[in-house]
Length: 384
Image 1 (cartoon, rainbow, N blue to C red):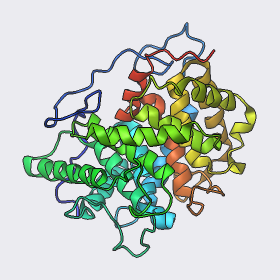
Image 2 (image 1 turned 90 degrees about the vertical axis):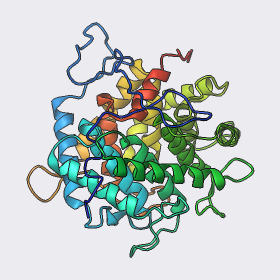
Image 3 (image 1 turned 60 degrees about the horizontal axis):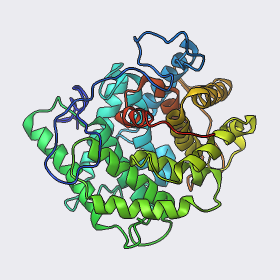
């Protein structure tokens, strides 16, 4: 089952800084720049004079490792986490991203590396000839397959790198190219995507697709600029509405994922999120609607804003995690509780644990999506 692709994350990751308008893949390695936003990579000198400097405390790091150990041990034989039911593929990809957040794609304890390899093998095995990454032939099915396709592409492009032999590299490159093309070919004329590419919900689905396309572009893959432009126009129309906190966070996060840091709507929307996250009620996570989805996106917004906003968010969110951590079976394993009122998903320990662990480990900056987001934050955002 592991033939090929076991070495998937062993090398450095190649990324470019903006959407490519044409051309082949680019083998360029990101240089790790000095920390901004009060965030640092392990081993850098702490900025003692910055009162808003954020660092992963030993207590939070231990919690994150226990959560990742639980995820690795509860992974199904197929390579996915079946507890999430019809959302098993996208939530499994979230779990894979959290494992990659510990020490980088393909790095860390052997249990983490094996889990990432296993998930990758599953995704590769479910990539169809037309580019569709679809999981209909497993026992639980998938009634919202567009999410699975988008998150599978996001995961593959976040871990895409060196360490493969030429045949393996070509195969994975072909799968990513096919997945990008599948998304481009199925965009609705108004710029959105639907939850099964024919109908149903479209707003949050569109967010996940823009994020996946952006990640593919950073990994050096060709993405049609016209597709992204239409999608951002659709997203911007919804950002202007009086929407819920979770939807506002998702629409705003996608501007950042797409590198649209100069949108006229960005300051007002970011200010609203900054004000909300400053309130203690924002961390009543067990009682929030769509809480995992809300924090998956609002954490990235606060990270982008930086300073006191990011420090306050990170401190209060990880405090909630510490207070709600539950011990899993076996030594050194723990998880976070399933939350009610999830985004079209049944309550799932895997969902909560994957999202929370990724947020806990954001200061590591090992995922390219956070490295790029940090660089974008150098364009100062005036929230006054």
